[in-house]
Amino acid sequence: MSRIAKSHVNAAFEWAADQISEAGGRDGVTSRAEIRRKIGELTGPERDLVDFFYRFILRQGAGASERVTRSDIDAALATARAELVAAFDTDNNGLSGDEVAAMPLLGRLAVKVARRRSRSGEELAANFEALGFSLVFEDYSTELHNERFLSFHAPVNLGELTAQSFREALGLHGDDPAQAIARIDDAGAFFARLAEAHTPGQTAQAVTLAQAMQSSLADLKVFIVGQDGTGPIHAVYVVGLAPDGSLTGLRTRVQWS
Image 1 (spheres, helix red, strand yellow):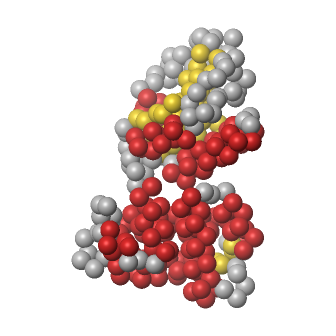
Image 2 (cartoon, rainbow, N blue to C red):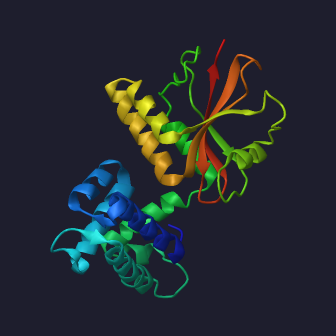
Image 3 (cartoon, rainbow, N blue to C red):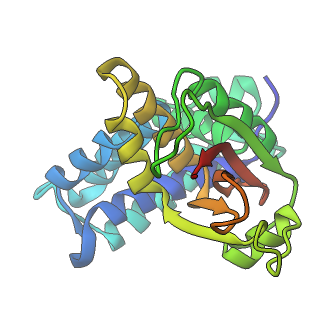
C-alpha cells in the first residue's frame, strides 16, 4: 500500500470535526442525540470515523454531560494530529503501510477516509456511476423512461461552484438559450426525491449514492441546461467539487414536450 501524507489524514479528522460541530446546530453544542442523527446520515468508514471521533472527544474531558463544544472538538483535533497521526510517521515522509497498521483504530479509520476522499475526481465519478447502476432518473416531470445516470468529470480546478464557474467548466455560452442554465437545485432535496421514487431495495442504493456524493464533493448542486423552447431534451448534471478541484458527479437527461 502506498504512503499517505499526514496532511490528508489530518484533513479527514478535520472533516469529522466539522461534521460533529455542524450536528450541534446554532447553539454550538453537540449532544449525544444530535450526533446519533448525524451518524444516521452517513455510511461506511465516514460514519465510523465520526462516531469514534465523537467518543474520543468525550474521553478527552467532555464526557460527563456527553455535550461537546467547538472548543472541546478543537482540543481533541489537536491531540489527534499529534498523537494519532504525527507520532506514527517515524521517518517524517508520510505514513507507510506498516505505520498505518500500528495506529489505533481511530487513526486507521482516518487513514481509510483520507484515502477515499483523496481520490481524483475522475475516480470518484466512476464510483458514483457504479453506485447508481440500477437507479433511474424520473424527476422534474420528465417524459423519458428508464433514463440512467452516467459519470461526469470535467478536469478543471475550481474554488467554488457557481453558475458562472459551471458554465466556464463546460464551455457553455450564456447568450445561447440552448446552453443557458435553466435551473439550479439543491442536491439534498433531489436525492430525497430519488430515494422516494424507488422500491425499498433500491431506496437503500439511492441513499448510499447520496451519502457517497455528499461526503466526497463540495458545493453539490443539480444543474439543468437549456431554456424552454430550445428542444425537448435537456442535460441534467448532479455535480460538485472533488478534492482536486475538478467538477465531478453524474449526468442524465430530462425531456419536456
